Image (tube, rainbow, N blue to C red; front, side, top):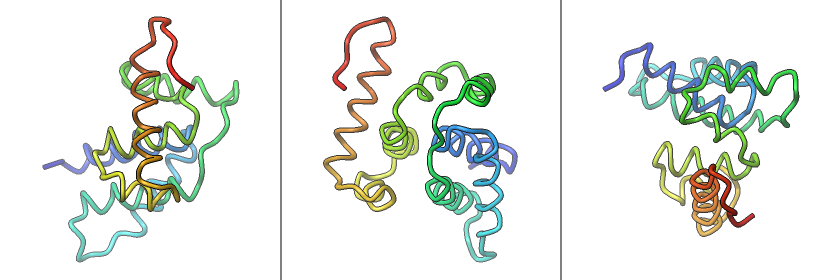
Length: 137
């Protein structure tokens, strides 16, 4: 079970990977906190509500000003996730990193479950090919 600071860190990291900016990630976490219900198991509810808020904010396009900044605070193994196209990044984060079912991801993203699987699998291939091999686009 997560301690308070750990779940906040995880929620922020997931929001950052989805939105692409620290400012939107912070906004999403604050929205997630605001949406908590006292009856909720707050750790899981905070993560879920932060993700929903992140989805509502939408992924930001890369910019030279704000894009390097989020990468610097991410763990090394997650930095390359930021290079994925926004829809692919969202699918990967929800399906692979969070382990949510393709049906739940499809509902959140407005896609079909097979599209989620294809997108997440393509993301995995792209991330695995960091050494210069060619991955499908």
